[in-house]
Length: 76
Image 1 (cartoon, rainbow, N blue to C red):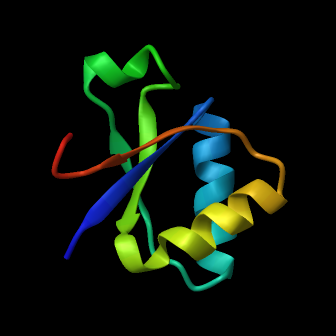
Image 2: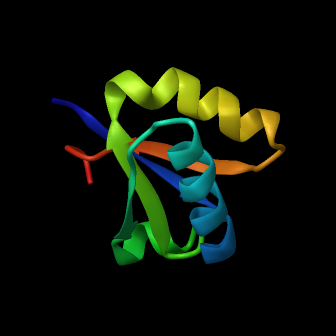
């Protein structure tokens, strides 16, 4: 099963988005990013499976939260 990591601008947004996703029955987990990705965000991201991605991204954008980047866990 393919997984993705959503990189956000701050750890505060990571926690808020995790709660938003959970309220909408989307399971995610907070992961520490590698140093090469920390420059682009806060150093943490949310990992979730690919089948949740379209709905998750839609929810995040509808709540006006900026997504810094989305990466595949395999590439990470």
